[in-house]
Length: 466
Image (cartoon, rainbow, N blue to C red; front, side, top):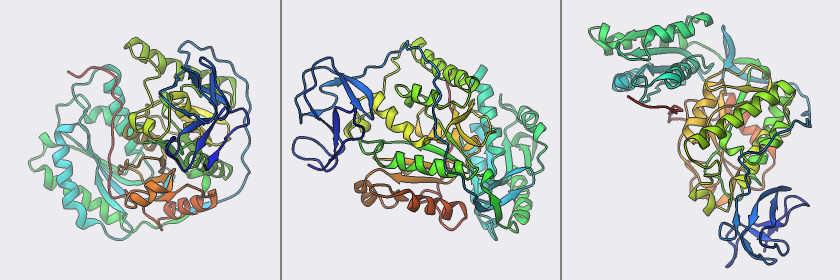
């Protein structure tokens, strides 16, 4: 049996090739484990045995349960490594207002789902305008913008404005209806401090022919955008998003640690990375807290974790309502195990900032972002915070893409070979040089991710809908 033991403290190993007793990617006991004893992987507790487990036996949901403590107390004990420093540039589209883009695109953003069809028609009609250096014209539709109250109403405005500020967008057209809660007046007020001259707005109720009106604006945008050129940009203007979805027993061994090395390399060269999926930090949050660069960052990170847990508890749900059926089939038993593998994507660098939902990245280094684990919602939040590209690891596979290039990195070769139309890079047995080379090709516009023709956004909704 080909297997691996991650940490010398572990009492379980991982079966890599599988056999008639233990599926590939699943755990087996390295020694006898008594009922009630801690099960240890990654050098940390991932659960407790619910029955006696003998050496060599399959270890999974039938004999292990979560050991999460919903009322755990957190302490700050800083220890993080400084990544190797380097200098690097990429070929990007410099923006007069700030960070450079890795794509030259035009976004069409509806303020409310009622005008989605208008935006889709405009996107289709505008494809003839995709010339020169323009990479694409995309309608970023969603179903919200009206009938939301309180924080939800504020969050949808903030999210859409953050998308409009994205450096991959050379120009942005906001299309409103005219009677929605999330109206153009509020959006204009939110964006006013940024003093952008690349954003246009109109309400469909206020023009006679919304299609002709919008297309004329897009034609003016395209006439300018087609002549934009790539040029050398310092890595300080690059930010990558770190996301995993459809994880399996290999994710914490191959793809996630590999992305962690990429994150360290980007940060070492002066760039930034953002980690999110707060519920998938539960069980591993203390490790991340100890990487916070200061007491202030630790306190803000702790508040984010506690508030997220409290939200679960107030609604009557356990914080450990995870992993998913696909995760379990792939070999992940408890949330602690999933989280310990998930945080590998952040590498060894310190955490320099904690971002609220929809907030723009401000610090060079690794930031933690307040957003859930849901793939579309989390990836949208990462991109909206300023990530020009999202590195998305997966053991099960998924075809989606958010509104920025979303690179799919498989944890195992089986899914990479089975879904070649989805997977950009097979992490199994690979070192970080190969993935970093592909990242640079993508950032420089020499490679387009398999899912890059798809553009989706999803909103993090927590309240009522009228």
